[in-house]
View 1 (spheres, helix red, strand yellow):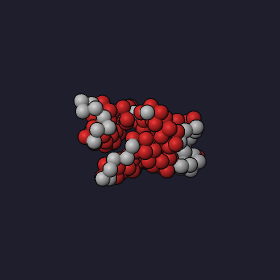
View 2 (spheres, rainbow, N blue to C red):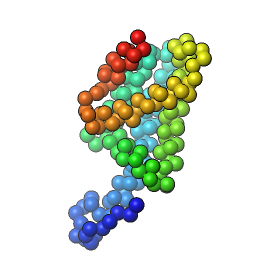
View 3 (cartoon, rainbow, N blue to C red):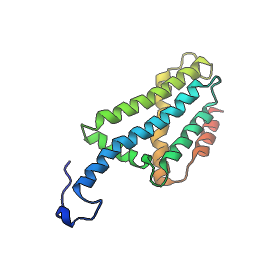
View 4 (tube, rainbow, N blue to C red):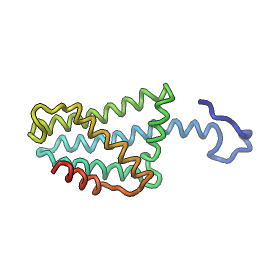
Length: 164
């Protein structure tokens, strides 16, 4: 969608011209990619450990990484805008879908490992479990950005209560 120009380029404030908007849009996929790669690293680290930590610890570590990427100007702050834009921008859609698919794949791998070590029933569907765990990602991000009243400890406590 083109950005309407409300003033001539020479009259616009720095950071408010059409090219600046293009730079911000170009930064969104990079920000989303940086965030997703950092999140995937947490899950990869967990899967490489000899003993699989309890789920609430995995989620807590993941949430701590998300918090570190949020910050006052962290790349995570742009992620929701990138998610929305991906729904309307055919050029961005495949990138964000790929990043979401990659991240969800790590959650599925975690579910497979949980099943293999007996933390899930033998007939549990790792794809369904991974998709469910992945749902925590955007929900946690949005709550941090908008409600500002949750943290990694909140997720740990909530999962501990749910999983008994």
